[in-house]
Image (cartoon, rainbow, N blue to C red; front, side, top):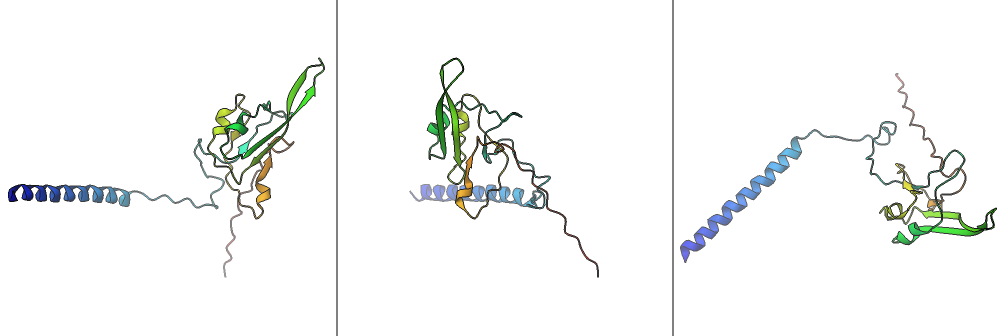
Amino acid sequence: MKEKENNSYIGGLIHGITSLLTGMKTTMTVFCRKKTTEQYPENRATLQLSDRFRGTLTMPHNERNEHHCIACGLCQIACPNDTITVTSEMVETEEGKKKKILAKYEYDLGSCIFCQLCVNACPHNAITFSQDFEHAVFDRSKLVKTLNQPGSHVEEKKKPAAPKEETTK
């Protein structure tokens, strides 16, 4: 009986030492790795984000300010926390047929969880995520965007921060 306890004690000790050495090997590998530090916001001009990064929901428009949204509401249904509100209206075409068009497409950036379910649900690729990620505001109402407004698709070009001039004395 004592021999069996000794074998289990020694086996447990050896297993503990090997797992400790495995952890130490991982720690030393990470410790010796070259460090990379992003100097944000100074590096805005050269900042590289992943292609899969989900920033702000946008509705791409062409040069005539037309978009692909048909106001089907699938993105609104797919959204798990009611971030998107699609308002549509019925209009009559020249042929006398009734057609549903998009009246207002509201997106609440403050409650979005960036899950991309709305983009995946859209059958016409009318919405997509952009690379814009700076959303700091003092008023939450500024986070509610109307995506189908004229000019709402134009991304503002942000000027890189000017280098600070050093004065020599």
